[in-house]
Length: 118
Image (tube, rainbow, N blue to C red; front, side):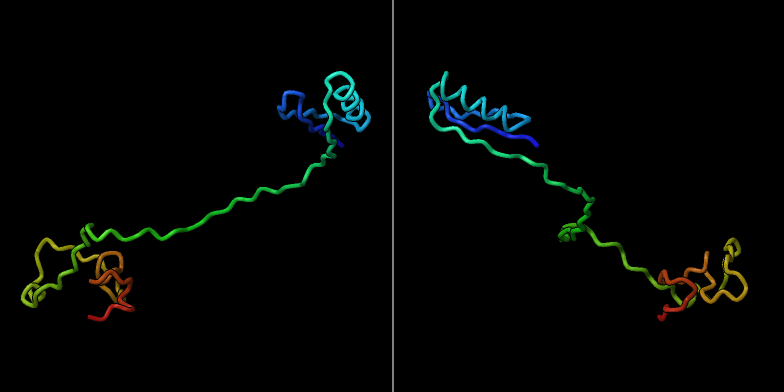
């Protein structure tokens, strides 16, 4: 266990002296009193406080900046465009695919058309 001698020098400056044993601390206090003329010295017993450092994540919601532009809304195709298929259009929907779009994504971005009601 470690010890700490806390004292104020004759000039009034604070001083600290760490020691490994109580006997060393007592000898240092005697030295301060007899050679340095220090009247007030204190001895403190130090012991380690066990600590455990843990990682901590905090999520914060950032304020919305009203000056940032919003993404454009999806525009529904006109009925005359749906009636005639385009010659270079590629149909990517698999058989039984409810959305029928590329990768199973419906017109509003819903997968497989489950929650896609227009």
